[in-house]
Amino acid sequence: MTAESLDGPIEEPLTGRQRRFHPAWTVALVALIALIGAAGFRAAPGVLMVPLEEEFGWSTAELSLAVSINLLLYGLIAPFAAALMQRFGIRAVTVVALFVIGAGAALSVFVATPGQLILTWGVLIGLGTGSMALVFAATITDTWFATRRGLVSGVLTAGSATGQLIFLPVIAAAAEDVGWRGASLIIAGGALAVAPLVWIFLRNRPSDLGVARYGETTPVMAADPVPRGTAAPRGTAWGAAKLAISTLREAARTKTFWALAIGFAICGATTNGLIGTHFIPSAHDHGMATTTAAGLLAVVGVFDIVGTVFSGWLTDRVNPRILLAAYYALRGVSLLFLPSLLSAEVQPSIIVFIVIYGLDWVATVPPTIALCREVFGDKGPLVFGWVFAAHQIGAGIASVLAGIVRDHTGQYTFAWFAAAGLCAVAALVSATIRRHPLSVRE
Picture 1 (cartoon, rainbow, N blue to C red):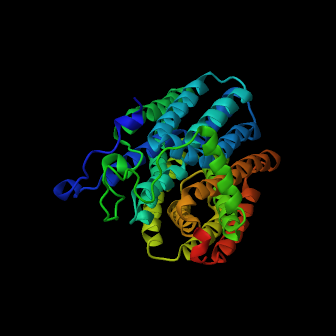
Picture 2: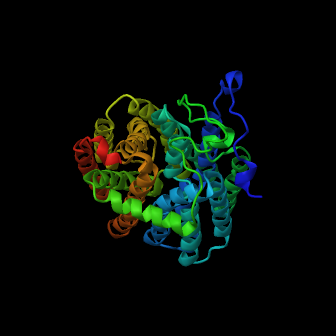
Picture 3: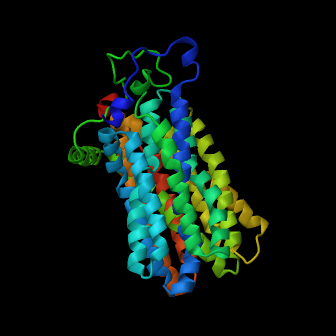
């Protein structure tokens, strides 16, 4: 008997008082906790780069290569993970991903060469976190919600920021007190602790509980196991891969896909690739303690929660094209000032930068998901998976290039200015995304 049959539709739909609290909110809560649990290792490289460099003598470029591979796989696996969720179910893919993250974090304590760091930090962690990245949030949102999608996607996206908030100070303190290996084991424990919760409470689709999506009024009977807008597991793993590739082939014929992909690639370059990976080393170059810089990034996480949830609320009410253009423009302006704000002490000016960057960090996600849904319909989560892959390609490239800039010039100034220019490009491209007729979605 499979897990799917154990969680099959109940005989009669829930009615009346039983329906007052829709199970979609329980699923969203469990998904949020899973995203928080997976966020730990994604927050770790910026904290652990300095201890690794001091212990092994590896260059910033060598360490950045491992992070870059992590970021690339984190994005490239996303569309295939979305297809696998359709084949094997959201729950099974998420649990496996959490175990891969835990294994990669635990095995990283044995690394002695840059190649081994690439295998653990890069490959295992990249595959695990990528399998439940933002495409996981998009899949949960589209599968379980017919309304409040912008708000839910914003809250789930903020889960990564929450994980950063929780883990960054802990990882920084652990790396200082018990070493970077102890910090890695903390991350492994966090990911593995979430897996049982996901297995018990996460459901693949509303019909598993005999309900429609939140916001739909049509009752779901046992004879109608798959409500509109949801996907039952089907086909084979190879079929899932072919679905992901065919979706890319279709989407790539539209200008909107490329506009979203370019904008999101720049988004990744200026968040995960630069600030997420190199802010702490850059602050350390200016004499700031690693734990202090990690604390500042944790503050980014606090305001990211506020900004992303608010962005989700706005996405339900404002043209997402306008939101994207505004977010990228604001980010570019803030990056122009960063080189002059870094110093050994925490000044009010760097706090202002942290707050602005936090509010803007992944506020781009809800409007991007909304545009994928608007243009590509039911294939929106898969298309977003490919757009997110572009996000991580941008992050990976920026991570390596910024490391090279640091090794050759002794500072990150040129990297920050280049990123500001790219944000201006993203703002322009996003503002010009045109509205599509209904036929484009079909």
